[in-house]
Length: 633
Image 1: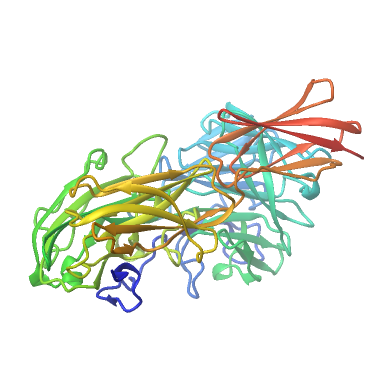
Image 2 (image 1 turned 135 degrees about the horizontal axis):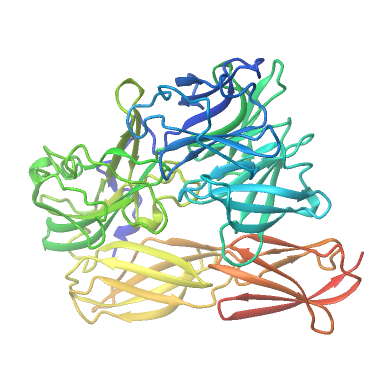
């Protein structure tokens, strides 16, 4: 049988080419001054399209009556109440906090009158602060530039009471010179990045800062070419800002997914930056074909699943999604269209568009609705629905591509900010594969394919995917039903994509079964390829497409250096999920150090331990690994 699924001359019937807006469209919030050389004229501003060739100041708000200059002040955006918070700590023994309503998610503007008296005054003095998506406010203090340890606080912004405290360990090989200079950025997905220090300033990612067990750890990323004081999350990137407070105001861009740092660029609109935060409307969407029933040789009933999520830190206005089935299949070939929310797929209480028909009316939701951002354990920040339709006049071996497009806005009128994301083919887990919070990166907007193979083909593969869980590969595949004259499937794998081994036979017991799964345990490290071989009753066979699984580190923790001197760095396997606990014991079994590693890297400080043999114990779920470590100073 011909391998229809992987033929190279399949015709593309529809590809979504994009829209004029972005999956994330951040607004940079700058605390500084309107010109580069005026620290004694403090303002805060909101800048749209900050990384474009033509950034635009949405609003510029004077703070000269509240602050004598922009030093010793912080600004942070709170996703929980959509307001800005400014903290003045110049006295050294108290905080003065102003809470400012700038009209989100409606019209953005300066407050009508910023009072001279702060909203809150208390004794707690933070060193930098930033809100996470749940409205938790984080700060740093008591830094020891010898041990690299400091304290992280989650504190109540209304009264300065500390709610939760963590110890943070910076890497001994790259300690910041100080924490009194720098800034914090927390992505809507929870990742924290900080820039700290003078001569030089250094960039880190902070891990396990909000975990209930173990210390937080800072992973060194880069040394900045010049001193930097601000950091903000902009469209999947980090903008890191600085000034010499005289004539030079600048920024750098750190690409989170590619781990690259840009050249220096003049700061937006000639302003001076001293502290930054961001408002990041963001949307992500996926679409997958979850069921196909062949009516005849050129007609099929299709069921698609569409998932749309608020991925940002602000409520989205005018939330909607469009799906134009007519563009993919031809308007005259689409019928029997229906739309429904899946179970627990509409905790936001949205209303469907009752007129949706997939051709002349392509909006899935009724207009004028809002979608909250994710806060705590709420499940009202996304919706998931199914589209069912019948398509006719299909051609053999012609691939029909189709996308759903999520859209939304914040603000209104001339300062409206639009976001739009074309769906990525797959489940909700595929909305942002590189985990940088921006669903619109290259390769993350893949249309969903459908085709009917030649009439002699008993099986039509709808989808094949492989997922890594605890060093096991979970291989799933979906086929159109009914299957005719089909006997069995064989799961094959390869480590080079050329030489294949059959590892499992799955018999086809029912012509109406569409979903199959196989688990391969203890897989080797590196790239692993999977494909499904379908065998007919007459022994003729065909293959699915090939899928790749990257088991980066297999099941081994990387412990380096060993022998160790002042520190031991432990890197978790790619396959490990959840926290791993670390314990270091001396030769007679006394526990000396405890720490936690969360899906990345942790560092144990061994500078004060005497030379000798030690035992490192790593525990993840029920698995325990022990490793001898030699310390030599």
